[in-house]
Image (cartoon, rainbow, N blue to C red):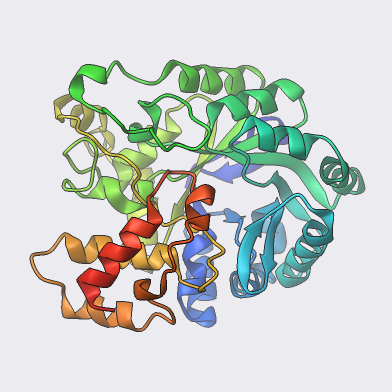
Length: 381
């Protein structure tokens, strides 16, 4: 494994990291073992934006015997309310949620204290003025968070963060599809009218953001590098062509300022595929030939299964419903295995009441209510 300095934090992080959002899908022991396996392969950075107790317990269990050799991105403002994820700046929720994170990590500090998920100027102003940011600064002064970071999908917010001089690193969504579209606060129209005539390379605002990060020594860790796995499939890719993990990892790591890409894993085999990047040939890493030869087509509002749509008043696991729908709808008939997994969900799409609260929280403009209708029709429940 190769390691890179994460900007002005000075810490050395593995080029391939661990995005923890899928840990809760599996048995606690199995997920803890998966993290230990990844650590054995040289991975030393893990992101924990998830507020649910299970995910946090898993990470705590996996790192407790080797805490000093892990770097944890812990998010401030990601809270668990009534069994659901809620993003907030209200201190009556923020403080206990962060204290819970420390307790479940079995640690008295977090390496990278993340100002959680800001995509709009309105949200930026709310977070940067008042008790929330004072709490973040206080945690930093006490050493409870050793470095201040921020997570965003919007390069405009990223640039604001760089210019404040407050943050030392940024968690940012990077993949070839995102880089070709203009910045937006809600991403509702990110892929509208996306055809070959529009393509002129990386979006200038994103390029400027990367340049500023490099210039100011702000390290970048990468989320959404695989676009929820869609870029692995020709039928789902906006390029009409499939990429490999090594190609997408190489793409992210060749952006200015990037130190590590945090990949999501369900299995040890997926860890091996990602870590193979370190031994891959130049031909295996070549993403440019895929982009250059691929026709571009419209690709609007597609789910990346990130989970930010929560909470759902009906407790529907929207990300998993969408994932099963995408897997099943790509086939001529619904595979029995997918149908069984779908039916095993505690709440299915037919329970959706169409409130669309989730749509206001989705950073990718997914029309969730419509997809729930289609999922219920496809699976029959």
